[in-house]
Image (cartoon, rainbow, N blue to C red; front, side, top):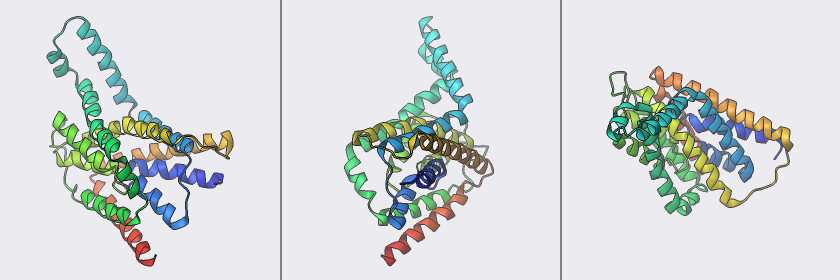
Length: 275
């Protein structure tokens, strides 16, 4: 695989990881259509790390607030303050706990059903149906998550969003699309639903990178410069995808992505008929 293909794959990872159009679905599609090779493990991990950094930079204020409240919580506990009072007062502490809770369903399902899920990655039929399903879910977010909706997330909300993320392990189902939509369907303000999904992506993407280490490492032929360029391509495309998605959500245009997903579903179906 030459440098051009590595850079293409890096940009594809960055764009599709956060836009609600499924990174896994696009990878399977390009593998089927142009014989695109699945990236080597170490290169794939580099792309995952790059996209994690893009979220960290994008959410730096939220993450700093979480860190401050975690330190503050430990200080309050040391002083003997009631845990109930600490929980009630510290909003970002609650947000951190809810993110951790939301990760659990995907970890459990990924651990127990990974063999079954991996088989789906060779099925363009599954990808086609998944694109149609993602597009339909996105379409029904029209009018959801308006400013009058609730601006506080609950444990039940986080667990249900976590279950949605677990379903998104299926290739072709968008992780960001399903988690943000689930938040909106639960009555969350659309900006809060998106912010929670972005925060949730940090441990999720990191866990996916660690999981891929089970396959061992491969050798890359593009050199250090190629690795740096690929990292930057994934980081920048990921960051700008977050910016674009946030603006579309703020303008109540999140459901526009449904048309793209439906289009990809039809293309995959056409390839199946042709093949």
